[in-house]
Length: 526
Image: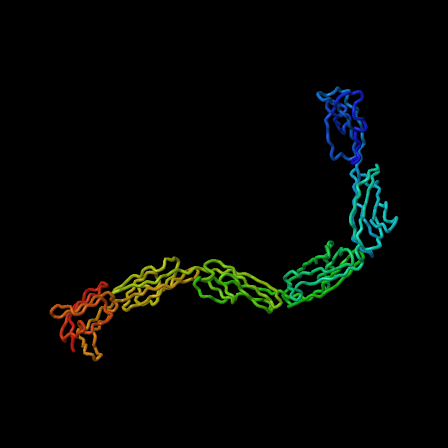
């Protein structure tokens, strides 16, 4: 049989009768006797594992040190019957001291199909029970008298007398007084839209809890249970999770939670606790209109809580302050996700998001132009953007106020403001052109520098805008008695810290800026 195989050397001997010298012995094995008797086709085979309930044929070939021996030294074929050995196995029951008889389910097998003919020997690991500690029944059954750990062993024997290796399992007879107990994590702030955690604190006087049933809503669903057939060791509390159907109204609901624990079939204990679950807030976050990057910071108000649950909302995201102010220039051009989170006073949370588009603003410049009174000038381009609407203000003295490059002919120095608005996004930019109008200088022909504070200076109106002009005054002999580049300080009728005599003097004024020189006479009276 397998596991107790007969050695062919023992059956046939180890040396052919009458042989002298050194020999090598080789056993050849086959399951086909007809083929095996054909010496020329015999091939050594290794059957591992062996075929089930098979017959094997052996023969021995003997060779010398230099050559094969004649066929007469090949032994006769030996027939050996090989039978399989059964495999013992069984299942342990969940068992407590009060359950009475422990029933062990026999799961032994044999590969040749003769399992109905197997015989058994049980050892229940309870020597104090005397002759009842063993049994030859197929199903093992034993009454234990104490809650402790035991070793249960089973052997199985086939009809051919082949016996299995013993199969042993440690078996715990659990105590008869389990105690159901659990705690609820964060029990004062439970929310209907979050997972609630129940921490197992059940115990037993000896052994283990073998099964736990949870009833998370005894009042409304008394027959709905979640069963754990493997609660685990008592040393580390196991955490069970449950999510109730989310609700927003009423503000809270109560649920009766039941726990039933077993240490065997009949050893059971239960407990019930009432929990309060708070309503989940419901957030609605309305769309945020697109904004321009140069728009000032503004308060976000699009997020609301729909069910009147007391709490506080908070906006977050790039460009959002702690008070919910959104600054487009900080966020920058592009799409940005803003989150609105609402937390109730019971710490229940809901949130939603919206994307806000920050559009770029057109770019416009500011420039200065100069113009002689009575002339005109075409405004240069102060923005290179396309797809814009234009508006100039004021519109006076412009050929058109709604184009980029109007012709301007103001009579006074004027600053024109351009508003350039993107036709798609509505974003706008502000630019300006300041037109400095150079009026014709008004040159008086007399002044009286006598110290009476009336007409003491030669004031030339409109010359102040000609910043690089030159003013020269000569006496009747052609001697230059006054000269100035620019005319920010008018002439006071003095030459080298001395008053000039009353009389007529002659001037040459060059305004530049494209205006011709101005000449004439000026009379000084004292």
